[in-house]
Length: 146
View 1 (spheres, rainbow, N blue to C red):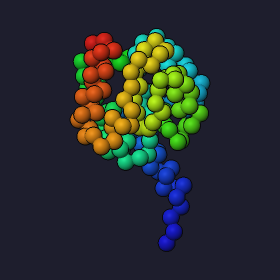
View 2: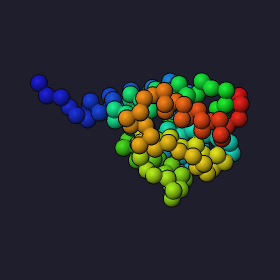
View 3: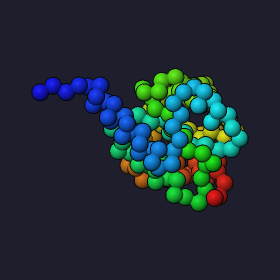
View 4: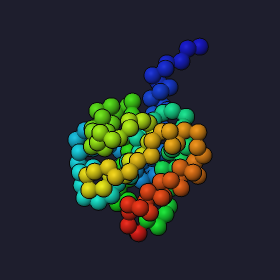
């Protein structure tokens, strides 16, 4: 029995996308989507999604649970590294030269500029609750009460 690798990966990527969109995140799949979304006034949480284990076991659950907090960003966005390559590259360009490209990761963008981030090294090997707490600390610092 043989398995088509692309079929398997497409299924995994579809599920990884659906987890976040079902949780209220808007997918940015093109550079134009990214420009339109991230240059708007207000605060946004951007999750750089991935198919790796730490994305599925730590980052996506943290992204979904962290938003249950008194302070939240105005917008929740996601770009998918390795899948929507041009959109991811555009997001990283907006994040600026100080951004360490990694996936999964999170960025807080305020009024078109990245003001904080959580890199893969702060996700991989950590438990989901510590990542949730880290995200909520960024909300506390950069977001308004809802």
